[in-house]
Length: 258
Image (cartoon, rainbow, N blue to C red; front, side, top):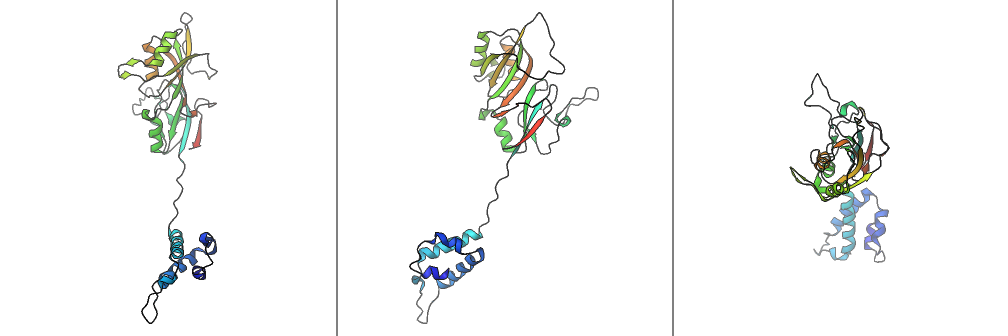
């Protein structure tokens, strides 16, 4: 390697990295340091005999060999969970009562280090995302990132076109005007039966809506449909951003690397 430095015909130093091992690079660096300051009896420094760009190249190689490689960041993990009806979207019940204990996430999965990214009401069903990454949790839950969330809502009555348009334009609630949404009437979806079932009343019809919002206010979908005269009977969240509930049955979950 040292001979190559002095050889005027050796011009392609891209291959030098393949010719020397880790230890030889360090040795070359040390020899160069000595050679660059070597003098003869006359006291004249001969550092000019070295081709400095080549010497700098070898020093760079040595520095690179001494620089620790950064470890690749471990992937974050998320849990897609189909939350059943009347289950809290947390692992403990801070308001637990001996007379009326409520089911929590702990009844369905064990996930130390995971926290819910956003919430889903106790009386709502469907997709709940948990993650072990605090930053990812904020990106999923914070409304400023404007992730679309899709809900299927069974409402009381046959919804009108006017009400659908009002939901799309935004509803003035007590905490302000909602962002524009996407709303349409859908046929009865092929989904799991709820336990306990929705109370059936023959005298009052019902229908299903698909509602997509970019916010996460407390009980927002229920308040929106009630404001236009069609209260929710059953509410299921099916998607959050790119994540979908797909074929997960109530109480089932899947773990993904992201």
